[in-house]
Image (tube, rainbow, N blue to C red; front, side, top):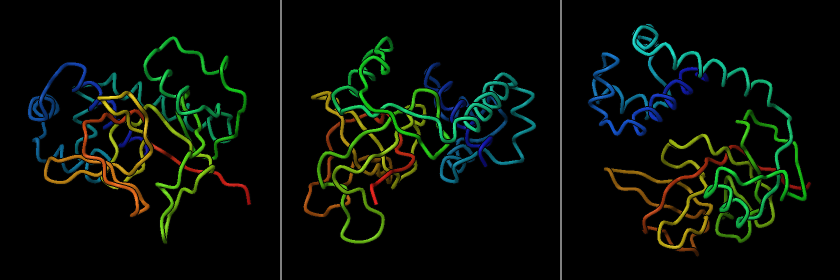
Length: 206
């Protein structure tokens, strides 16, 4: 599924860059917009369309294959632990240097892109009463190249009105998007936002 998911991410990045609709990008690879939506729901391009994609957009295979190799080599490599302010500056400027600002680095146990980083959770809004939880001060790993999360995945999002970064669950249903905390004592966020990274794991002191 790794390569199929990477290809889907690259295809979505191209669609946004060129300003195409789902119908237009699907037509270019011999698919329908409904099939494209199904791929996003499943998290990867169907096997039946891999050959078609190879014929129509072979450059996506090259970049995706390179990404797979890089991610395979990234297991256990260290990423900087940033503050939320530093992470916000990082997303605002491509020239922002993580290495010059981070005081701590930590090994990431998940495959990740070169620009991944870690954050310390700063409140208990993602502390769940049961099940998967992200308590205050635990370390989360963020991949800024994963910008197409599925509904229910934890993400780092930037609020468009303030520019602040928040850590919440990305939710989407019937074309509506919102951010949900795991802690029911915190409110759901419905204001405009953009996803700037997907949380791929966490680390806690035992």
